[in-house]
Each structure stands twice: as structure tokens, then as C-alpha cells.
Length: 95
Image (cartoon, rainbow, N blue to C red; front, side):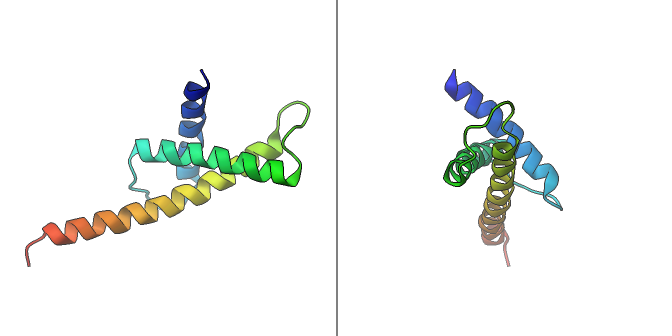
């Protein structure tokens, strides 16, 4: 059940990150979900390092760290994805 929740949270974080980043992102949904999962892991690690990993009630600070990490990761991966995709399209186009 842990993997299912990780995928769901990664999907939601990835979609939120895509919505926040200005402009259009071209990365596929599966890559966005993986980036969201990585954002959740990194956000949890940052929260734990700052001492806010365990709070009573809803962990708003931990969720904010997760969203910020997901935004950064989605933006970076989308830029890498477009750079790679752009190179492949340029190689296919006859000159």
C-alpha cells in the first residue's frame, strides 16, 4: 500500500508543480509523477533536516517543502527532457 500512496502523492505533487511553473511543460505524465515522488522524498528530507518532520496535526511545513522541491525538480527535468527531445528532433530533420 505504501507504493500506491507514493504514486498518488507523486502524481498530485507533479500536477501542482506543473500548474505553478509558468509556460508549457512538455514532459509526459509518467515523468511528472516520478518527479513528484522525488519531490516528496526531497521535501521530507529537508523538513527532517530542519527539525519539522513530526508536527501535530497536518504537517503544512512539510507539505510546503515537498511542493517547492517538486517544482524545482519538475522544472529541471522538463528542461532536460526538452533539451534531449529537441536534439532528437533536430537529428531527424533532413537538412
